[in-house]
Image (tube, rainbow, N blue to C red; front, side, top):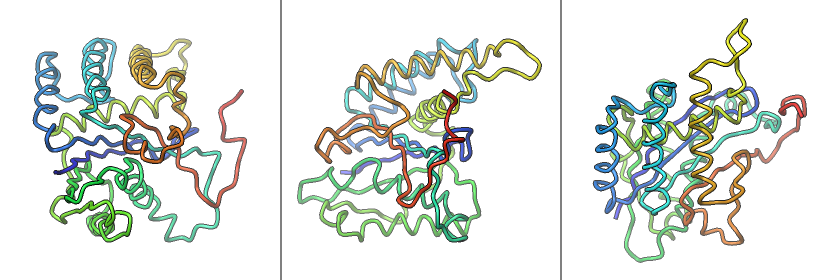
Length: 276
């Protein structure tokens, strides 16, 4: 058995929320079916690459159709999706210079370690292997390799040993999202969340009184995504961590979750919150 995890990152510094990471997990037994279903729909719709930045008024209905199918697969349990971000008003304090410089990879590491609840996923005596496909990392090759070594070492931690979760070094790779439809769909959901959490749906071109058609289209797509999430979880709050309903294993069981990462040592700055 393998878990294939596709990961992406978005805005590192937004107006209200930053450090957006997204991931989709598919079991090896479902991978070919999921890819085939999504690729067939993508071809039917005549889309070259599915990407949040390419959402426009002309393509809105096609993106809604693509997103609809993606969430059908999430609801059916074929795909698990996780979104992580930070809130600017809650900033870490007491960080060393090295910690600040490596914050991108440190947060990425936390996302991969915790977001899917992997340590709750395997109660059998048989090992489960992780394959991790990361959208190309925006940093030096040396830093990327050091980061991959940290990910590889997860299997040596007690909780991962107990859950029989294993990782092969060659299965931690950077990929081009153009070649991976699951990663493309994840990019759309991740993009929609950072768009709404940073109030980009209100943005107007300089000197204009009205929003651009592309902004309106993106807001409509966000609203559809929000509707599909709330079909799973009524009253879902996109800006807060999803509760585990008294059972930590739901970090694995839930098909869709958000995680607002809050630093242990932090300070609160009300000036960085949204105007009331």
